[in-house]
Amino acid sequence: MAATRRMTVSQALVEFLAHQWTVDGDVRERTVPGMFGIFGHGNVAGIGQALKQANVEQPDLMPYYQARNEQAMVHQSVGFARMHRRRATFASAASVGPGAANMLTGAALATTNRLPALLLPSDTFATRVADPVLQQLEQPWDIGLTVNDAFRPLSKFFDRVQRAEQLPSIALAAMRVLTDPAETGAVTIALPEDVQAEAFDVPVEFLQDREWHIRRPLPERGPLERAVAAIRGARRPFIVAGGGVLYSGAEEQLRALVEATGIPVGTSQAGGGVLDWDHPQYLGGVGATGTTAANRRATEADVVIGIGTRYSDFTTSSRTAFQDPDVIFVNINVAAFDAYKHGSQLPVVADAREAIEALAAALAGWIVDDEYRARVAAEKEAWDAAVDRAFAPSGQGLPGQPEIIGAVQSSTGPKDVVVQAAGSLPGDLHKLWRVRDPLGYHVEYAFSCMGYEIAGGLGAKRGLLADGDDRDVVVMVGDGSYLMLNTELVTAVAEGIKLIVVLIQNHGYASIGHLSETVGSERFGTWYREYDPEARNFQGDEVLPVDLAANARSYGLDVIEVEPGPGAIDDLKDAMATAKASTRSTFIQINSDPLIYAPDGEGWWDVPVPEASTLDSTLQARGEYEQQRAAQRPLLG
Image 1 (cartoon, rainbow, N blue to C red):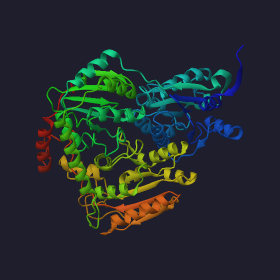
Image 2 (cartoon, rainbow, N blue to C red):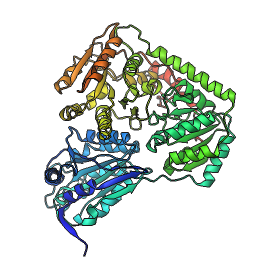
Image 3 (spheres, one colour):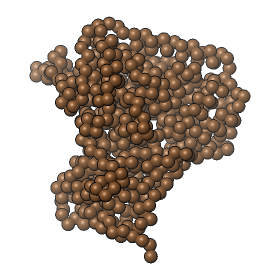
């Protein structure tokens, strides 16, 4: 008879997770090295008790970490997973009802970014003995429906433990998805609060170490041969590198490939770091927020080689980036869903590293012609000069965001990490930030979630510290995103985790404000201003008397306020030097002029403009929109 232990569902789940290991070649690490939890009546006697018991008996079994917001727990998990190239993540436990619902945004973010996060939302009574329980959602047309069913479309895996005996099969199925490079994302196990505390005879085998080996599928011979033939026939090939290159650890292989062939590279937001900014073949970001260097090569490319990219609308400039009428697309991706996107003729379903190595071997001796290399070099030189000009201090009382980025860039070390997610900063960073390390650029732009920055940055720092890496993490955030979710600064202070937060104060939504202008809405609703009761809007000149520096100071951070004036950029550099020298978290606030923009990269984003309007600004914007939309392709081809 197999050996068993009498345990509750929560105790068994905690111990099970503590013994899961991810193996990627020579790297072996715990898949779930810790758990975040915010406790309520739905889980305080279940997961909460199990974590307390583990803390008393085996403190290293499943370390528990506090958080201040359930959404932020998932964001931390995603930031951690990014730094560990998807090999590890955290679990996040929330109470029933609003606590669970708070994690929905985090679930969508994890799944959209193809990054693993384990979610353990509590659920209402499986027995319905207490029905309706406090915080229970009731729908008369489906009595069994709960808040947690909202996780179904947001998760790559969802199941509910209705009976204690179901836990082993559910937990093992969840781990398969969590560690699958093609399927990973939010993995949700809903835990009814009564089932969490139920005991059953747990097979000892379920609680022993188990290894999950990362799959690195090789490219099939036929698709590879067809891809190689297309590349060998190309005169203007172009690589679009995405996050899959980094998650497979393929940056060295990519560098070797492009150095041997001369093929230029543009990156998606997730692909930032696959090559250093000054590499001869690296042209910067591509697409709606890309550089002129990358976008001009994309426009004329006859063969586009996508490696580990989702081909989002920003990466393709809403399908206007690739204008050669006979363009051919070679899509390399571990997920068939992404490899076949937009009607690609030459999908290669394979791990990025394995596929790049196979391409390099098959393309041995082949190289782009000298004329194309010269054009690539000229475009790169011109864009680098444009960035230099954008970084140059203007001496104005309110510097523009490009100058601020330049000051932060010059103050960071080559391995430091910049973290961002939403607003105007992702676009400017995609164009301007000079990445010098594979892990040095983390801009969450698949979901582009306002409020991700601080929590995601904290998760990224956790991920680095777990590997004994003490490089600095610099969170750049606008006041709009800061107001969305800033409370994880308390978590950083509580644990003594150092972050450098650079808050750019522009009194509104800079990105949407600019977009509002381009679509003819004249920045309506995008300024932080006092309400004008006569005009019935917020479009006046009186800024709000909000002191975000005081807010950060109240959390216990060191705070440096850069005063407006011609020396603001130099003062920002001094503040960065102080922050880097400190062992504590530092909050730096600088005011900016939101109307100073980064250099135009010749990308476009499809945001429909009304066909009919009484506003002249909207009618003019509609005409410009129709001109841009004329360049769209129905399929990539």
